[in-house]
Image (tube, rainbow, N blue to C red; front, side, top):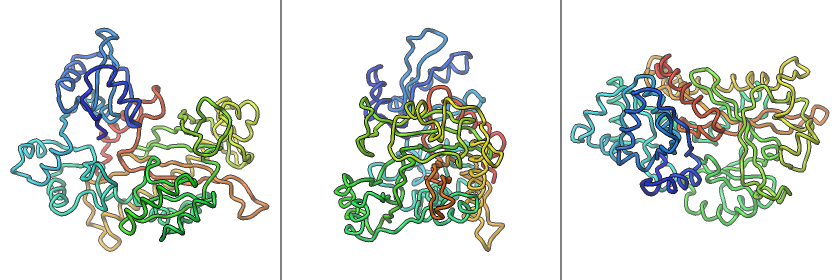
Length: 441
């Protein structure tokens, strides 16, 4: 969990926590039932949770603002659903896994049905090769045999973060679904990596990179790349993929799916600061986030352009260049009779079900179809797939935009960057997926 550096003691410190952390947000919470009031009081009295939330009661007796790490919202939703919720600190959880019966928390852990959260064995460093190993992994197996579910499951979490391998595993289905699959190139030296970056046509990523961490985009990143490469290679794999200008020009759509059901489609796009004139990729520091269901242009109709501009400017002057057109007609149909939204859903469904197949294979094994443990399904509960578009001119006469999978996010992915209106949608969807047996495989 993303804890604040110091306990939150006042509104100023809570504001600083939200502004300074991508995974924090503010929600308005209606105190409509005794259960909600009692649970909130319990949370406020917890010394551990002072690092994760702050409640502002200035709105009166019937509602409050909660400044919090985004996943606390799931605990609030579970409490509303009648679930008994308890919190355990990361260090205490790891100690419990290590000591088992000798830990004062072992009885608590054995009494619950589901543990939500990724225990970080190395919170100050890049993720280890396997989050749970040795004695810890054996404890996980013991708990699983008892019927205690832990999500996200560490092996699936590890699998989705191995980006280089995932590119290769998904490439056939991406191409079959009509998209374009990236061809990553393994980077084996600082000289090779520096050449890639200085060309301006490639970016470099390190395995386990996410949300911009360990991603090297321009010549400004050369020094950092060289430093990280010398520190982590060969223990960590580095790879290069071609720079896709459409990520800035057209943005990407983050698709959230819980137990096969679409929860959200959010278009995100880098935006300039106060100065709207483009000054290169590193000038775009902000990121917009808007609901886009129904407002996506059919990909074959999007016209190319090569100079980025603020989304609002494009929508007025060159709407034919937009993928997400906030002011456009709802459900505009393309040449194949499908809307841009339906096109994306058709594409994403094939990727999603391939991921579910890969998750099953990871546990069943190709030669052991009965070895699957029915309480460790992870991607079924929540999966976030980030999709962009890329200009495909491999056949010049058929040049057009196609879908590309930018990333598959592991279970504990960012939820709340899409704005206040949808902050409850994904936690509510997770609760419903749990009720329908999402973890049962």
